[in-house]
Each structure stands twice: as structure tokens, then as C-alpha cells.
Amino acid sequence: MQRLTSIPRDLQITGTGQQLFQLHTSTYTRIRESAAENSFQRRLQVTWEDMDDGRQLISCQVVQEKMELDSSCTHLEYIIKAISAVTHYVEFYVDGKQQVTGIANMPDIKEIWMDTKARLWADYKGMEIQQLTQGYDNRFGKEKALLDDLLQYNLYGLFLNRINTSYPFSGEKQLEKQYNAIFNHAPLPVTETRRIVEGKSLTDPLRVQISGSLNETQLDTAALGQYLFETLEIPASEEAELLLEQYQGDYLLHHSSYIPLKADLKYRLTIGNAYVRKAAFRIDLLES
Image 1 (cartoon, rainbow, N blue to C red):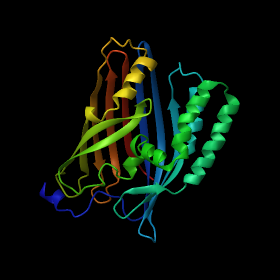
Image 2: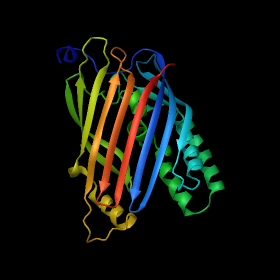
Image 3: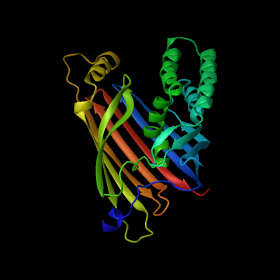
């Protein structure tokens, strides 16, 4: 590990450039006897450039999208496409320490969301669509909420090298993370371990291995209990343990630019016998 520990900087995207990435996300969710499988594919064009004030501007634009939704999801494809289009173009500010400090085009995103919400309300009536859009009001209306979502759940963060921005090469590092809310907007706390694996030669890609476990001491048990008894309708007398059965990832980074070449992340979450969620995220670098 000597070569890695001697490099005096973090993994980061520097200079000016552009790349095209293929993203694939597949999910399986079962609540009691009802199950749904969905798949999403995106091509994302990422551009980064240095600014005069020392910051970087990183732009992410969706250039192609394909959705394969479960047949039981009535009208869901139209709704998801409409909401997804709100963040088809996002510009991030990144400071000299490679920390994401804000969204440059936040006013445009808010305006697009208001137009999208009005269109959805015109096409669908009732409390269901209002409750759905209410959750997105918070996400698209507040910069921090949207930034947290994009950097953690929608995988834009990988292009900003969020897998390694707060520490230099050290071989292994543990850190606390909060992942996307699933239990009444309560975040899922995870203790994540990252291991940097050295290649055989100086031109080999860098491999970062990631694994995670549930941090039960930080879990919002009140929100989880409400989700169990009200959403899943589990009797109070029934035991239902929350388990993070699988959480692991593998990333390949270019040896000099440290942009992602490939990525694969999977997790499996269960609550007793009533709830199962499996998700897989894959990213491949394409020719620009």
C-alpha cells in the first residue's frame, strides 16, 4: 500500500473534461404478498470545469432514459418520467476541498418542478397525487434536501467522487452515512467501510471496495415502528426485526483522473417477513 499512501491528495475530478456514463438501476420491493420490480436505464453526460474563484462547476445532463416498470404500477410510468425530468440537468458547485457546496441551477429546478406539479395535478385528482407531490415539494424546494438526495440516492454523487472526498489514500476508512429515507422520511443510518485496493501497475485502475452495516444506535425507531404498524399493518404483538442483509459495492477509478470507469452497488433490506427491498446500481463509462 506504500504507493497509495504516499499520494498527497484525495481522489478527485480536476481540470476540464467531459464523459458519458451508462446507469442501470433495478429494484425489487415486496410488502406482504404484493411485489413490484422496476428497472431504469440512463445515459448521463458529465462535464467539469475549473472556475476563476477556485471552485469547480460540474454539470450532469440526462441524454437518454428508459424505464421498465412493473405492470401493476398503474399510470406510474408517466408520473415517474414527469418527476424524473425535473433533475435531467443539474449543475453542482464544488470547492477546493472537493466538497459539494451547492446547486448552481437551483432556481431553474424549482421552476421546472412547479410546472411539473401543476401538470400532474391537472391530470390526476385526489389525495394520492397530492400526498405524492407533497414529498417532492420538500425535495425540490429546499437545496439541502435535493443535494442530499442527489449525492446519495440518485448516484450523481459518484461522478463527484463522493466515494472518497473527505480523506486521502489510507487503505481503509470507516464513516457514518445517512441513506435515502424509507420509513416515514426517516433516514437509514449506515456505517460504511471503504477499502482501496492497489493495482499491479501504475496504470491500473484504482479499486475501491465498499461494505456497510446498519447502525442501530442511530436508527429512528419511532418512525420505524409507525411504518410497521400503520403502513405494513403488523400487529403490535408480532416481532419484526429490521435487517440490512447485504450492502456492498465495488468501484473502478481511472488511475490519473479518478473518474469512475465502472461501479456496482447492491443492498438488501428486510423487516421480518413483511418487507423486502433489493436494489442494484451499475455504472459504466462510455465513449464520449
